[in-house]
Length: 240
Image 1 (cartoon, rainbow, N blue to C red):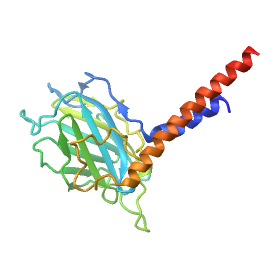
Image 2 (image 1 turned 135 degrees about the horizontal axis):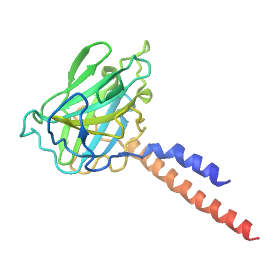
Image 3 (image 1 turned 180 degrees about the vertical axis):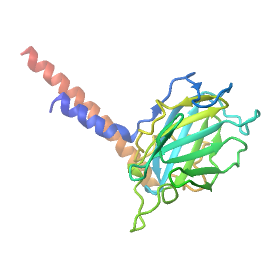
Image 4 (image 1 turned 90 degrees about the vertical axis):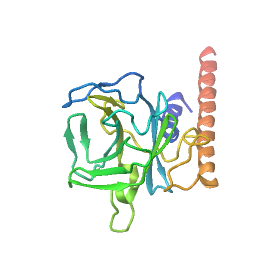
């Protein structure tokens, strides 16, 4: 075993638990829109497959508790940008290579999500997200987001995503805003803190899902130990 093998193995397992971090205070002027604004400062985002891979779940964390409804009109907006490689994509303003948008306008805690189907020019409402302090949890069925194949299946692993939080003329983009993040196969152990339940469409994590998380964590720990062992062994050989 060498360090190259260990590095490759770690990279293969790491997406199971990784989240995307976003710098603080990085809001910029929205393209195509003029005026002031104070979007909530996004600091962390995680997307994973829920309900045994049949739904997409996103949990967004902000630097301070969210004020919903937004006391200042117009309300701030959260857009989950989705790219499905099997569907034609559009680009406009801060939105590039997008064909689906999962949108939340912070007009009220019970405000429904809006799914925008850009190439087709349609939209559909869905259940409100859960607002809990600094976190916003959004869940959408895969069949509604991407549609089903002829066998009644949906493959959410193919989608890529990003986030834009906007208020007035200011936008906070996750990274460069281009949908490039993959969906994790299991949620991060910190993605469901106490007192922060998943949306009503998602059942509480089952024992089997907890076991999957435990296995992923154990695998990471084992690979880390193997990496340390391989590096030490190589160092001993060089001394000889």
